Image (cartoon, rainbow, N blue to C red):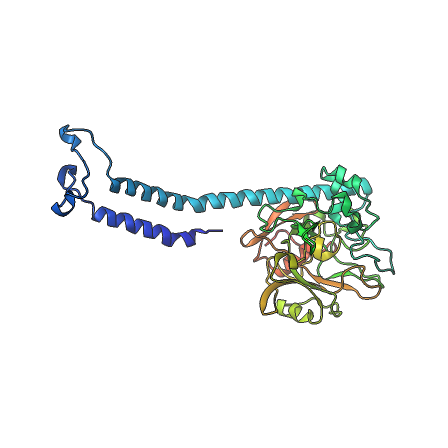
Amino acid sequence: MPTFDRQRPCAASLISLVAEVVRLWPFGHRGQFLTTSATSDKLRFSRFRNLNGVGPRGFTLIELLVVVVIIAILVLLLLPAVQSAREAARRMACKNHLRQLTLAVLNYQSTQQVFPPGFVIDPGTSLGTNNGSWSIHGRLLPYLEEGEAYRRVDLSLPWDKQADTGVPTMRVATFLCPSEVNDQVRVHSDGSSKVYPLNYGFNFGTWLVFDPIGDREGDGVFFVNSNLSPARLTDGLSKTMCVTEVKAFTSYYRNGNDPGPAVPTSPAEVAAMVVGAETRLGSKTNDNTGHTEWPDGRVHHSGVTTVFVPNTVVERTYDNQQYDIDFNSRKEGDAVIAPTYAAITARSYHPGLVNAARMDGGVETISNAIKLNVWRALGTRAGGEIAHGSN
């Protein structure tokens, strides 16, 4: 996307051209066009001095050129303002999507008495299929005017076994930010459609997402088999994040060694944890599969954690290329013993920020410069922190 700074050299060149044209303007006094004997026989322009009423005044080629150059300069000067207005409109639409999602969560709670679970699995078991549990997004379909899609599927069955319904490949506009550059269906290796991505991840807490054998829960609002009522959010609905932005087709690692309960303190620490883990990244867009399955309830697809502030780059080199990665130590439902820890960073294509919605329906802009302790406080439901704003 062009920016104002990139266009300044071009505008400056055009301005210089105009100055040169004016300097070499071949007119004498009182507007009479001057010619030399060397060129008069080859090219003649008629220009009459209308001050004396001799005849009609025409436009010369140079005059037309000057007008074109001036118009081009004006277009270049206006272009950044137009692009800025478009981005502001996209941010506004993005905020509206977040508000709709949060209102859908509240309507779900009003009907079911609890907030939707992030993932559902029978305790002490593992899933028999790779994609066994529907996401929060899937559970919210009837509250987003997608009732027909909701009626076509069975949330008790794996979503990837219901591909013939057409729902997994359905583009749900509310799940996508207008600024997303890869607004496209994810495909199988044969090129056929598999599933559509998303741009909004629900709050799965700080670091721990799931402990299949213990009684530990993630400290966010949504986690495996969660069934929280508003009373469980003791920090307050207005001080707890519901959902924020993520990028589709994110590079990520999964199913590595148990990193332990200590929350990472730096991107380099997370990058070191992925040694030996499975890769979901590559040079092609479709190789990077994080946040590409809106029906899937796992945190690397439909969630976010607050290990790092928004748009933090977690750099990892793979096959001589640099990637900005997410990390899921063990995908939920994959093992009956190993816990799930995850560093799933909030990201967006809005410069320097992400949009986020709180549990009371309020939507705000979160700067990349937010303090880490404030960001993590927004991610906990009962941490006892005091967070009166995003600063």
